[in-house]
Image (tube, rainbow, N blue to C red):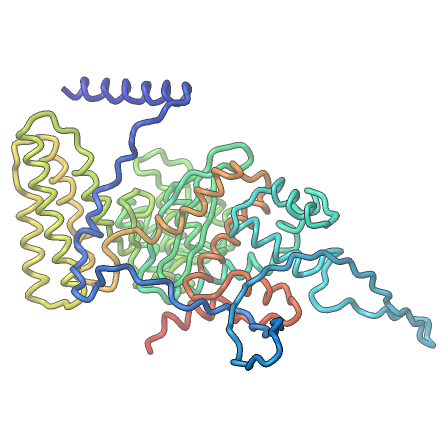
Amino acid sequence: MDEIAALKQVVSEQREEIARLKGLKGRPDIKPSGMDNATEPANPLKREKRPGRGKVRPRVEVEDRIIKAAAPAGSRFKGYETYQVQELVLSVYAVRYLRERWVTPDGQTIVAPLPEGTRGHFGPDLRRFVLMQYHQGQSTLPRLAALLHSVGLSISKREIQRLLTEKQDGFLDESRDVLRAGLETSPWVSVDDTGARHKAKNGFCTQIGNDRFTWFGTRSSKSRLNFLDLLRAGHTDFMLNDAAFDYMRGRALPAPLIACLAAQPETTFADQDAWSAHLDRLGFTALTTTPDPVLIATEGAQWGSIHAHGFLCDAVVLSDDAGQFAVGRHALCWVHAERLVHKLDTFTDLHRAAQQKVRKLIWDYYADLKVYQANPSTSRRLALRARFDRIFRRRTGFVTLDRLLARLHANKAELLMVLERPEIPLHTNGSENDIRCQVTRRKVSAGTRSDVGRNCRDAFLGLAKTCAKHSVAFWDYLGSRLSVPGQKLIPPLPELVRCRGQPA
């Protein structure tokens, strides 16, 4: 029956591909189970009728203009009838600065400086518009060039590319500092990844964030080693400390090897080369045992570096059960756990009845976890733990479902992390929402061709998401950083992340 189900899946995919090639309508897109929305408590104050949009309040200063009416003689003036119109002005102008040059008595030449914000031959407002349209507007470079040409600007695609990638060190540093501030102050972070193309090769983009910040990092691998490297937030050192040795013990590195590392006087290594040379001197690279001693020791030293810099000291890492994210205090997404039951192939009425019964039990349990989050108590926590065992240790007669329940029960500590830390979410919906902009960017422009282009794409998308989480318009943020005349000052985003994390 499993083979028949697999063959049916292959036939279904072939039919869908044939329909696509013929230009026919494809099969309907079946939505996920919707467990999180279905378990929300009913709001008795919710209106039946959808409210109107309310009064329009422009974000700019409103200019008053009086329009005269052709009234006949003897008419009486009765005031004004207001009618508000919002308008957008796109205009292009070029300025030739005549910079005074003076020669001092001692022979030095003094040239008048350019206005603030002027870097290169394109003004700050143009740079802001290009960055806004490309990153938040998800435009492509050819379309952006066509738009700028149509309004009268003389600029090439190559020059637009330079505006997007060159001299962006300030934005890259702020994106890195946002990650550091989030890892230092957040009680939890949610993580996810998606495919990405870089230099015509498949890679992976990892998202790290929560309700305070969002950060993206694209690399060629999605291993745990890569994830730990991203969590170092730009630091390159390796540290041997208590956190590092605890990690190595948890990953089953033999005790004699841990003792060998602990006996050495060196505990800090500046970069990968210094760390690799240290392992080579100790003979780790010549070992062929399982697990790989070099890999586990390197991961442990990275975890030690993360703790040494004050990152994730007591924070929970929330993920969808991807293996590379299982570090530190780890929690699992309930929506992904229920989705495994939802996606099971059933072949008989008995299978379908067992699947629906288990799904209902999980939905009811999930709703009670939400109630616990709002009002945690010791008695309710103990009752929920016992109830978890009753649900996931049951035997339904559907072998595949029973194996899945046993597998989920093995993840009890991670699924029930919310009982110890009620502030963490029960799902990774926030990460999935954040990472959609990367998916859209991948569909719009395939991939990046240079490391600086990749880093700029990740940084600007992360900064735009972080701005939105602090109710800061990305347009205003760019104007503040590019010194646009008259633009209000936006404080550094790392400060906003830290202030959001401090108790009121």
